[in-house]
Structure formats: structure tokens, C-alpha cells
Length: 485
Image 1 (spheres, one colour):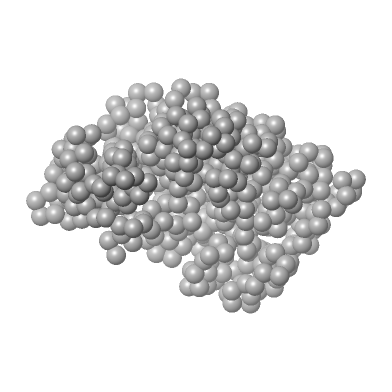
Image 2 (tube, helix red, strand yellow; image 1 turned 180 degrees about the horizontal axis):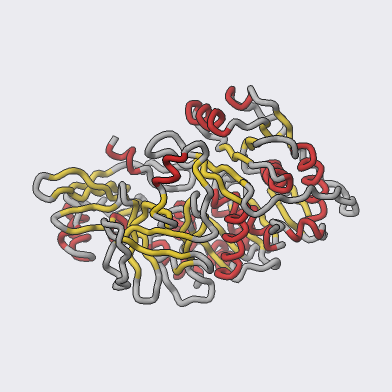
């Protein structure tokens, strides 16, 4: 049995969780979470109304201690999606912060309020329940449902423990680290990496509540050593750090800046490095696989890549026929497949989808990448939406997006494809012009020529649309299917 949080069982007085001015030491967290774990120990599954609060964190930790699978629910979820998740996962109880109104689908369930009142430091924690085996379901996290209703990804304790231990190695993550972030707590990035990760190490997390560059500067200037964020957050940090010496100094103080959930444009890498002297490292994972690869804290600069496979994780590229690609030439595009102890068990109630997701023991990620001579992987996009077949070439949308973002008149960019009688598919660019300049916005022809010079003529956009903003989900990923709609 792999105890998920050894430091919690040791019940030290070291800081564990902080949300704003509310905080719990490991001893206090144990005193609060232990009794709650006892109360919910007989439940089959618990839904958790996953606000970015201390209560959500305590609820999830209590469920993990009790061995009861937890289903984190996005508080901004739509009615139909929520109804599907509740019907599919069939929770016997919902945990929520006291006083919060729940939507009808959850309000119909038995409810237990999570009330967190910090006990005295000398309080004696109650004995913990016996933690179940490594293959026991820990969390059921629902996918975004871009190809149908969301699927419940059943994550075992084994996958969580392995990913967090592999990141300990890659990021040199220790009990001395204080993680700062403002990520939502209903998904892998904010919850598993951002809350469970520090607790696994015996360190602490300072959740900012809501993201702002000022809050990041305060958190890192106080005691923060690590920062987690998504590209939309790092873009704001990159833009403002060049003009705000307080923010730049705060970023300089951080031991590690980590970006995930989508690709970080090279222009933002360069801006942050110029302002702070710190590099941002990227990692690559999915709900089904947790973390697969990362740029290592002790590696040479690898901006624009998601690094190398984590310890114990096997990664390969395959061609359209499913044959493994041996080339590491930085040019050959293939689909990423993964196997290892970081993988999920199944899609809940979907044996058909589970079977279709695997090629033997390899999970088909649907992500396309190239591998360079040093073993670093560079994601070029999703197979379904980002691999463009134009004029006989396979082109990744990501490299065109990076080229567009290198133009001073472009603030945001997305690249998609549309059918073309001659080319098969034509490249389409969706642009948000840079507003922080007195220059005239770039023309469509100017941007097309810019890409042709930066990359190659066959990679230039044939159509350019200008928008006020790009549609994004809560994790900052661009919703490309909504662009054409």
C-alpha cells in the first residue's frame, strides 16, 4: 500500500494549505480531514463542488483518506453536462462549502457541508482510516466532451502517486518548496498537481484564489518557490513583467516556473526570460495519463518543447498505420502513444471507449508531436483539430501559431483548417491584434507573408480572420471547434 500523504500522518506543525488568510498546518489538516474521512467512509462515491477553497481541498483529501472515489465538479458547469455527470457517476453524497447553493442535479443528492475551522496546534488528530490498495479508484475526473458527452476518467491511487513522485525527480521538488498558483480545483493541473503534489512532498501550497499579476508578485515575494500557471496567465505575466520591476523581481525569486494545459508561445518564453532571467518549463499530460513528459529542472534550456519522458513512463510516436517512428530528426510528425503506471484504469461505464483508446498496452493520446535529437518532444497539436494536410504536407498548427505570435502586431493566434479543392485542406488563421501599440494592425497579407518567411511558403495561412477574442475553456485552451461555428 502506498500512503499518499506521509507528512499528513506524521501530523507536523509545518504549513500545508493556505487560501488567502486561512491556513492549516499538517497537524490541523489531519485533525479536520480525519473525522470527515470517517464520516464518509461508507459512501460509494462522493461528488465535490470544486470551488477554489480550503473546503474543496479538505473534502478531496478526506475522500482519499477514506478510500472513497471523489468526483470533482466544475462550479461553472452547464445544466445538461452536470446532469450527465451525476447520472453517469451516481454519487451517493455531495460535499460542498457551507452556505453554497447547488444546482438542481446536485441539490437532489444527500449533502454534507465541509466546515473548516482550524483547531489548536496541540489538537490530537483522530486515527486515520486504513488506506486502500494502489489500484483502488481515487478520483473520477470528467473530460471536456469535445466529441460527445464527457467521459469519466477513473484514476487509481497508483497513477497519482507515480506522477507526483516522477515530478519530484524531474523538478527536484522537496518539502521546502512553497507552490503558488490560482488554478481551478476540478481538474488535473490545479487539483492533483497543485494541491495533492505539495502535500505528497510534505511542502505547502499557497492558493491565490483568483489570478492576478499583483497576487502572483505578492505570493512569490513572500515565500513562494514555485509557480504553476496556464499560458493565458503567463502571457499576462510576460507582458507586464517588462514594465513592472516588482513583478520581474518576484519572478526572479521563484525556483521554478511551470506552464501546462496548453502550449506556451515562444514569444512569452522570451519575454519572461528577458525580464526575470528565469525560464518557464513546460510539461505534457492528459486527464487519462496524468503527466507523461517534462522539461527537467536540471536540463539545458528546451523552450518550445515539453521535455523528455518522466521516470517510469514510456512514450513513442507512431505513423498513420500505427507503426513506431524511430526518427528523432525534429521534423517527422507522429501521434504520441503512452504506457506506464501513470495511466487511468477505464472510462466509467464505457468499455467500448476504453478499448478503443488503447493500441495493445499503449494509450492513443490523439496528440501529434515531433522528437528532436536530444529526446525532447514538441507538440504540434491534436490529431483531430491541429494536424493539417495541405498540398501533400503534414503541418502542425502549433508551429504556425508560434510564427504568428512572433509578429509584433499579434496578441493571440489560433490556426485551423478548412476543406480546399486543390490543396485538400487550407490553413486558416484566427488573429487577435495587439492593442498595446500605436502601430496599425497587420493586414492578412502581411501575416501570411510573415509566416512564409519564418517557416516555409506552404505553411502560410490562406485565410485570415480578425477577432476581438478567442474562445477558451477554464484552463486557457482555445476552443477551436467554436471558431468555425
